[in-house]
Structure formats: C-alpha cells, structure tokens
Length: 153
Image (cartoon, rainbow, N blue to C red; front, side, top):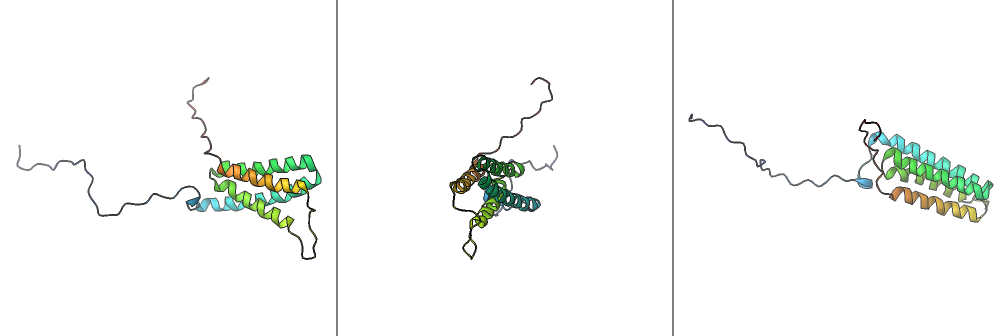
C-alpha cells in the first residue's frame, strides 16, 4: 500500500446553505406556455363564434336548435381541453362563448333587444355554462394506450 490513498466516495451529498425551493405551480396557477398563447386566442375567438351562432340557431329552431347549439358548445369546450391538455383549454373558449352571449343579450340604448326573453335562451345560457364547468373540472384525460407492437393485443 502506498502512503497516498484516494479519498473515499461519500454517499452524502455536499451540504449547502441554500434555502429549500418551493414547488413549481401547477394547473391554473402555472404561467401559460408562450407557444400556446396564439392557440388560446384562437380558442377564445372560436368560442365567441359558437356562442354567437348558437344564440341565433337556438332561437330559430327551438327544440332541435337548442340541442344543436349546446352540442356545438360542448364540442368546442371539450375540444379545447383535449387539444391543450389543460383546464385552461376548456375555460378560454367558455369565456369567449360567455362574452358573445352576454353581448347579444344586452339591450341597445334605444331599448331594443336582439332577442326576446324566452325559455330557450335561458336554457342555452344555463346549459352552456354547465357544460363549460363540466369540461373544465373533469378529471385528467386518459393517456393513450401504449402500443407494444404485437398484433392481437
């Protein structure tokens, strides 16, 4: 044996005086990814378009038009959720939808309304908001199954 020995590797990590870091925010508290901002803007515009057309369709074809408008709203909200894989993806088109519907429901200064007060419009508003809340608060989306490459499995 030589007089010079190598220092032994220690299993302990070096000690530092750095304070512990707080965990990164997740969910709606996390800052949006800058690459997704144009996608969110597009989803908001699409939600506003669906809200505008849904308001017109449900008033024109009452029973069937209401169901068609709610189905289109649900498709946009759920599609945004699946496309972005975030809750914000369902909330952004819902905000655009809500703003468009509220603007159409508001009266003009002359006292005219775009639509008369009807039960269909109330059902469209309540149903659309309920669908938006369901899509935004649903549990995590299922991950696609792993493909093993074996046929028949």
